[in-house]
Image (tube, rainbow, N blue to C red; front, side, top):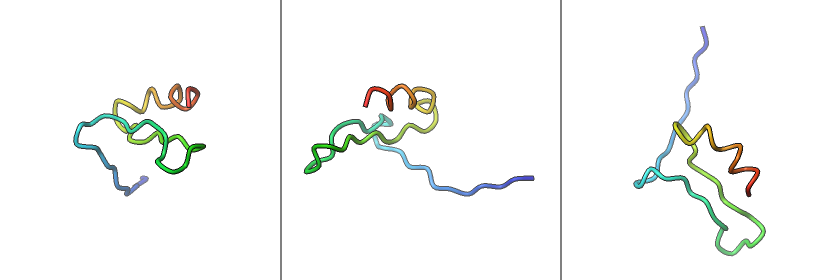
Amino acid sequence: MRLSVFMEGYTHSTRPLVGPVPGCDDIVLLARFSGQGFKISPAMGDLA
């Protein structure tokens, strides 16, 4: 048996967060790809 405990967060719109981090021009934020978005997260990483 295996047991895992973790917190999973969601935005109010249930959409992923994608875009530049304010004040850090060389960092792109890609977050909230849980559930259905999990399957497209590798492609989004390639695009970033």
